[in-house]
Structure formats: C-alpha cells, structure tokens
Image (cartoon, rainbow, N blue to C red; front, side, top):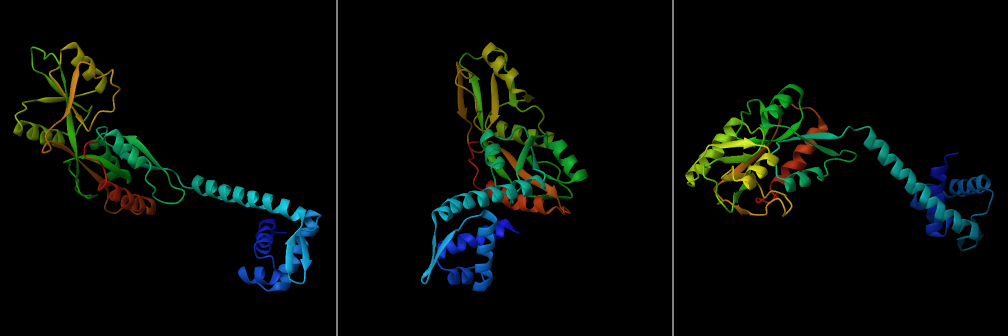
Length: 282
C-alpha cells in the first residue's frame, strides 16, 4: 500500500467533501477513489468519513488523521529536499581576499539552483585563475588579471577607504589591506592613487598588523577595499573616510570558457545578476 498516495487522496476528499469531485480534482474515476479510502480506513482501523447522499463529512477520527497526515506529508517533503541537497555538493566560489564583507554576504546567500548552496573560499586572484584553468569552477577576482581562455563578466568597482592616524608619523609609509593582490591590479590601483596626488608605493599587508602599525604611529596611511567592517574600538584615534570615486578596486567573475557543469552555468547567471546590485562603498 502506497501510504503517501492514499493520504493525498484522503486529503482531496476532505477538501472537496465529496468523492466524485475529489476524484475529478486528482484526475481519476470515483470508484477507485472510494476503494482507496476504504483501503486506508482498513489500514488505520477507523472510519474517516461519514458518507451522506450529499457527500462525505470527516468523522472525529478523520479530523485527527487529517492533521497528522498533513504533518507527515510536510515531513516527507522536507526529507526529499534534504536528500536532493545531499546529492549535490556545495558550489565553491573562490573569492579574492579583498572582496568586501557585504559583497561576500550577498554572494553567499544568492540562490543558484534547487538543492545547491554556495560556499565561499578566500583565494588570491592569481591562484584562483590557475585553479579554474586547471580544474574548472568559478571565482571572483581582483582585476585586471590575465584571463586568456576564461569567460569573464563585466568589471564591477568598489570604492577604497583610507584610515589615517590622527597624529601622523614622521616617516611616510603606506599600505593596502590585502595580503596577496595580483601585480596588475596593484599597479592599476597605485596609478589611480598617484593621479589623486597620493604617492606610494602601497605595500600589501595583513589587516591586524596594519591596524597595530597605525596606532603605533609606524604607518602613515592604510587603504581598504570597501568600508572595513571593524568595531569602533579598532578605529579609535584613526580617521576613516572614503577616497574620491575615481579611485576604486575592480572585480569580475571568471570561469572556463569550456565549462560544462550545469551548476556552474546556473551560478554564473545568478552571480552575474548580483554584480549589478552590489553597493559600491562595500
């Protein structure tokens, strides 16, 4: 006996309060419908309906069974969803460490396909490009970067913010809060900064050491891609402000041109749509 199917037919009769209309609603004849309900009643050991010339009314037992039947079907639906999810490995999105936190949150919650989740993996741009060329996948990289043989999205920009100590140190020293930016992207950022009168070089450094050096007076200026998501206590005695709009970091999605994974293509379309809606202040 297919218990779930019989519960579906039982719910149809309960909704319609009539065997004929219920049978029509599920696309079957009335005699098999009536037989199925009687088979379910024998299985459960109770009468589910009071039959009348005008239709069928739930008995007290039928009302209790209906409540439980709906819970059972909901539980089965959840089970099937979990099972589908378990058969599809999470999609890994390789993300350059300079990606602003708000952007990362948007990507991580982007629906791409039923049963497919996105997991973000911080990965320097140069390594991301190599991995995608060799193994496939999808990544968000800091541009410009060499993308021969890769599918690329449009470039999306994010403003830079600067942190400067209230008391400037004696010797000028500048840093970009990024541990391993690609050389072409760092050169492009440096050129933009110089055009605004900010002389470098801007060395790439980890966030913890940069904050410590700013507070200790060892660093003149630090730059962050997007507004840094720091607690106010970190930036006490520091001035935090956005740089002029022409100065920005550039990001784009990359994947292999010959990528055959359906999930990757679904993710590309979904993530590409997100790019247009990202906050430019990060």
